[in-house]
Amino acid sequence: MLRSCRRLGFLLASGTHLKPASDGQVRRVLTQGGCISAQRGRLRAFLSQSSSSSSSSSSSRSGPDASSSIGVRLFAGTGGPICLTSPCTGRRAFSQGPAGSSPGIRLRTRLGVTLLIGAGILGAWWYVRSEKQLKHRLQRLEQLKQAAVGQGDFHLLDHTGRRRSKRDFRGRWVLLYFGFTHCPDICPEELEKLCGVVRELERDPALPPVQPLFVSVDPERDDVPAMARYVSDFHPRLLGLTGSPEEVREAGRAYRVYCSAGPKDEDGDYIVDHTVLIYLLSPDGLFLDYYNRTKDETQIADSVRKHMKAHRALFPDSP
Image (cartoon, rainbow, N blue to C red):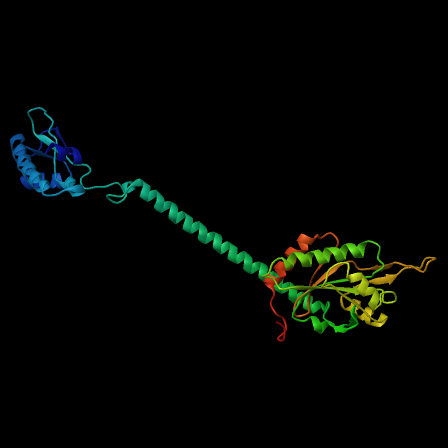
């Protein structure tokens, strides 16, 4: 009886004189809460009967269900009637969670839900960002296609004497540079950088090979033997291309390359002023990007990787 009273916290206290309550009213207050008045002797008899039935029923139960038995606590008062209240019968605080659940489990559940929601938001952001970048690259490809840079064909001789055209390199990624073999410093530096990018990309077997090309803008001095001697100092797959003055001009014009030979010195030597850029061509032969002297090998290699990842064939017969 006392243990049941401690569990539910009913309170009996002396009150003012009220009309005596019936047994049904007392039961209602014990189960639902309220305030009634009853004669002390009659109430004690009812509580005694209730405690007997509660103790017999609770003895047959175990665990959390045993706490549902009804109990009261009597406090001695004056000789008048008694006020009975039950302010919180049958209620459970929402913050306590389901019966039998532990705080650790509830905390882990909340953390798990939070992590799942955060991962979903992060994944959605990454997907939208990737799609936006891909859309931007495709739009740039269309703009380059409309600009007609590098879409024309060329017909030149390689450093082995074989006739080459742009179609020979379809299906391969190409890094292209225009220069001349008598260049004192800029051309060797740029060609070394270009070949360094090719070597760095070759370290990744998952990437397709990149073909390095060197086109002369000085056909008068850069014949086939001169090109063969020059390209051998850089990369075994570097291909030197030359031709007649008209063929060289046509190739340069397709890529908007400016070149102009300077005055000759007393030894007959001269410098050719020309555009200093490395061009990237896609497997469909389209100009994709260019890199000036401020770009180093790592930056160019990273850019080429991104273009490879975003590449979409623009022509039906392209790979």
